[in-house]
Image (cartoon, rainbow, N blue to C red; front, side, top):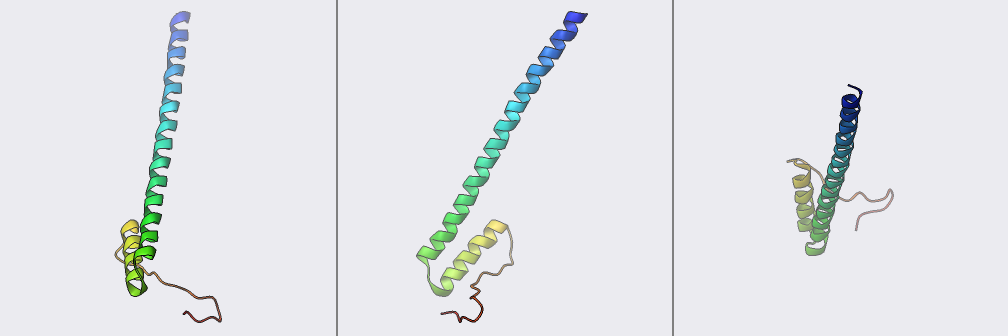
Length: 87
């Protein structure tokens, strides 16, 4: 009976360790997926700033932000420093 208990404990310990490895791997994959998504979002916003000007720039950047945030509502603009007028 002592041997069976010891084998069970060792087996449970090994499976617990394997589960921890799988969990860490899954967390790493999720982190990588989120980092990729954030980089893709930033690139889309930067692309709008490179490819568009004026109102079209703000319209395109807002569309990207609204799509990423899954929102129909949003505001995108420029807030000047106090005492300075926007140019």
